[in-house]
Length: 487
Image (cartoon, rainbow, N blue to C red; front, side, top):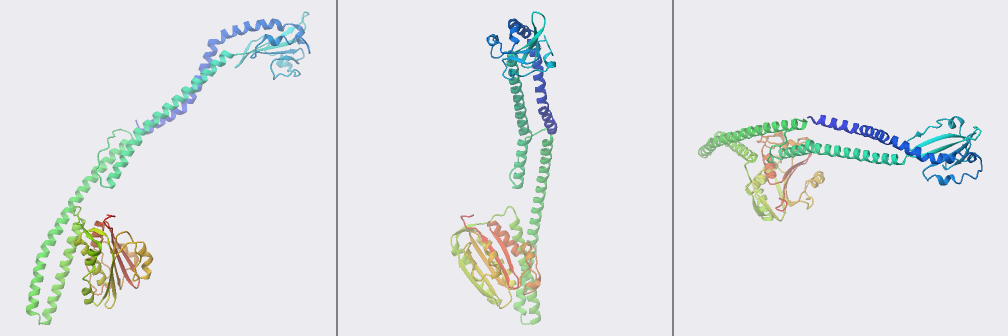
């Protein structure tokens, strides 16, 4: 049965149950009256007869009569007697509500005479009293409580109330158990499977087989999961084929490029004096170097994207390692006519892939040198995160730099020269992105993989890369990796 039908059924039952309880209560009262009516009637008549004999005395229906006192001894605390004279004035009453001076309406006084009326709580009998000459001198009214019937009524109330509450509790408990079994447990399993799917954890099959709405959702989820699994296998297969194809093409291109470069070097040495031949050979060598670098970057990019590739990390001393890492760039900058300033303030232990971290700094410096005109400056520094802002950081970037500091090592490369717009910041770190060639002093395009590869290497070290442009001044690249404790 559908969950909607179960819920509607439980709602109808809860709505009908109070009406059913009232009906059962009414039926029980009727049966109580039927079972005790005749016997109770006879008992009341018998008890009243002994009192009626005393109430026939005409002297009782006079004001200030001395005969009223013995009447209180005839009845118990639960019985009530009221005496009226012929005009309807109350002569005597054991009921505190009936004041002696009150007068009863004549119509009410003559109503239901000689009839033993059965009320909800009491039996009532009212009769007239005549003197010896047959003249009306008054009335008496006797009220006898239905104590046994009232006790039975209270018991039935308690039973009906207890039964109703118990039934409601059972229905509520049943609905809770039903919802927990039909909704909560399967939904919890479904949510757990979704979390596993989002985090690529191992997933099992949900053991919930039903024909309700949740069962249909789970059935469709299992179908979707199977389709996604097959699609993922297909994507992985295609990715692996693509990586193998790129690796094969790169290998096939690398060999002839190496031969071209070797023969070009030989020709340059033999015919280097001829300026025209020399220029042609330099162009050939330059293009061969560019293609070789492009193939290296492409191989590295494919390797880093592979799910099977793991960094070869070793534990190093921070001061010794980073000192080695930032050294050796002075000559390169000097050849380009650029002033290089280096700083280092680092300590602690780090776990890094040495080869890949060298590539990180090479890529950062290559990017800076390509976009720094002659006569301008580059700053290369390594410092611990949270140690403040270096004095040479562009003023416009100081506040933004504070938001990029973490516990660990910060590699900072800042250069003067043309930069990009802030809207391009997210794109510049994407693979194969090539900015305007006017930013580069040699006006040549590159592979567009250098900063993307740097970002991927840092991510595999649990680190980050930030590009901070400063309009009309230059750019700041911030590379961060955590220390061995944070890793």
